[in-house]
Image (cartoon, rainbow, N blue to C red; front, top):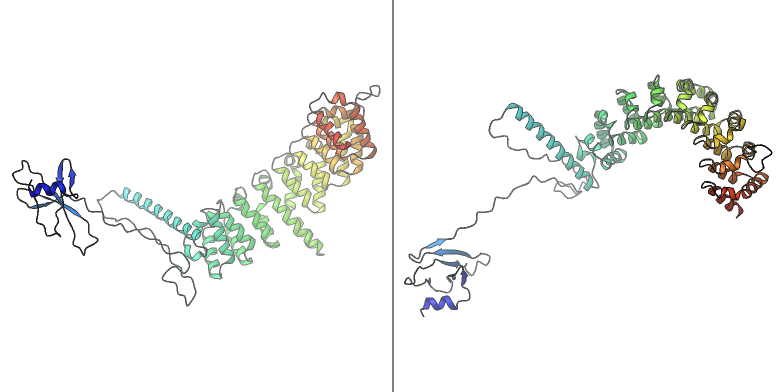
Length: 512
């Protein structure tokens, strides 16, 4: 066996690939190259590692090929070089005291403008002018979106962020989301004078985009709530430049107008009210506008009551007169508004808050059509307010409507009128309550038939059984004993009704 063959068989560092033996070439042992004998048929190329020097500890082993015929080394195909590193446009440091520009001696935060994304190289093949304009628009929108994303990340991560760090895009941040609008609102409240001035200037410049925005209106409401008198004046000047009536019809715009009415002083609020002349009915019937009229009634009435308490009746009368146009339109359309889904709310606010003269005028107009309102889906709410805030004359008129000619039986079975009967039992004076209970205990079939009264028929009704339960709850002394005795005597009859069980349960509770 030759020296070469023994070397190949015994060396544990030999590598076998596809039946071919590759063995390392030891250039640091002082051993020359070893090749398979040229007499061997079809000699295979040898793969050997080129070992590094002893001092180069971090080099890697690279295999090279040698041709047996000539012994000239030939390098194996090397993998392609790695791509050059890509350098990204890094965002600025946004944490307090974390950048090189921070000066510890001054202790002040330094503000850096946001980095705009790197624009692509404009060089390239010539394209049409239309495509160039289109690409420019797309790049501009992408730039704006990326700037907005960077700014939102800035205010989210930095607890000491200020409006100086987002200068130029404050209105965009205010419209982004609720957290961003609350951030701007907070800085406008607690920031320095320069920061507040910066934010207010940016907001006033874009107020037309903020008034009707889902999140932008939050900033405007906050400025009316805690802003100075000068700030409120600037805001109102900007709002007067808009279509105030259109804002009242808008979901978000009406909220700003409501907050302005509640926050402005007496003179400024009265100036704003003048914008609503000839628009009371459209506002009252609108889903959003009716809230504006409600706030007007509450605010002006509070101004008038405050002036009356301070001993200035002339001022109180003058303030109430400023709201008279609302009362006049309401009285002229009282039946329509009282039976309207949104109009009934405005009528209720007038009954609750207006001064006595205006309240009485509204109540008189309601009593003129109260028989229709008792059985109406929305009119019942107005009638309940009349029972609470009306005078004795108004309550007596409603009570007579409930009890005349045996109407209590049919009204107690009515889906909407039954609520009025319950209101009389629960909130009415004792004499009104006793009169209703006596009407319920009357015989409905004549004196010759015992035990057949209104109370038993109402107990078996799917709606009127609630009225009977309320009667048992509020009745006293002799009337309560009579009701309990009558129901217990008809226990067998009532037990057959699926609705009378609630009345029996109420009786069981009273016995305990």
